[in-house]
Amino acid sequence: MVHIPAGSSRLPLDDGLDELDEAWLRSKPGAKWARAGAGVIPSWIADMDFPTPRPVRDALVALAEGGDLGYSSGTDTALLEEKWAARMATRYGWAPDGGHFRLFCDVVQAVQAAVDVTTSPGDGILLLTPSYPPLWRAIEDSGRRLLAVPALEAEAGWPFDLDLAEEQAGRAKLLLLANPHNPTGRVLSRLELLRLGDLVERHNLLVVADEVHADLVLTGGPHIPFASLSGDLAGRTVTLYSASKSYNLGGMRCAVAYIGPAEVERRLASFPSELFGRVSVAALVSTLASWTKPGDEWLDRCLARLRANRDIIAQWLTGAGAEAGVHGSPSEGTYLQWLDFRPAGLSDDPAAWLLEHAKVMMGSGPHFGPGGPGFARLNFATTPAVLEEVLSRVHGAITGAEPNTAEPNTAEPNTTAGTTPTVGTSRVRTSTQ
Image (cartoon, rainbow, N blue to C red):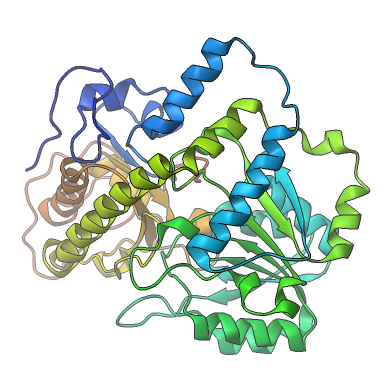
């Protein structure tokens, strides 16, 4: 079994992309490691294990040493809009035109605001499922109707049932689109996006495009912004983007909304500005430091590590994972791996069983709504040693013993042919991000 290297709790001098001390990881105050129990390896919430990029840390140190942590003057906001537009043009070949730039404190806040101003209670909203929990909750908690577009089982990838999307579009007002997709890791092809675009135009829908993982495409070409497909679609789309996932800044709370539909902007402007809060000067500085040449050099190194980790998972899925009855298709984007534990006999909430029997903390499949039971989400934005330990524990827990849901498992290895683990009734209740 691979073990996480032990050592001091000091921050690594390099990027930490290849090796991190367990003591440093367990000393982190963020939710990912702080909520893990003794001996548990967390791979649940969508934070990376790596230190925040040095250009960001340096910028925050300079800000603190300058002694001014007051309100933003507005200059940083204007600069952020300029940097965002340049980034869209250089990375994605999209020159936004005719929309309105607005900052929110969080992508989830922007999603909720957009749902509230584009739809009314009872309206149908198309959503690719399973889904990042705040997206489907934004629909159901506000009294809208979730029109699920489920992922289909296939030999490779997770294609979505676009035929069903077509059937349901007549009952919809909005398409809420997460691409790259969380939790499946799918990156929709241009053909898939064009088909959705055609559906949107024919049924006169609005679109909220959550593209927070845009920088994290691991295979093929670059991310394709939905609004870049045509002028008409740009005028229907609210595009959401942030440095939070690609630069490990989830707690800094800064998100960009580029609002194509003029009516959506007018409705947002009708709300008191204080309702949405203000992005802090530290969040602005962090984002600006990310979108620099040193920041993007770090991102390139990070993507290389994520691709290598993706390869580790792919190899495991064809070897030890398959032996344990765990299925999955390596992610095309994000740093999230959607794993099917149903062949292993874990048909409800595998994450709860794994926490108890493998001391591994994954994202709970049922928390991702329709299509989630029997699955768990693995965050692989970590070092090879940590990832290999997680995979080793999962394999060992499933193949090495009959589970005991009442007490910690101390049974002898089970070699009975055809016997598979069963799921306990307990649930892991965590705020899955």
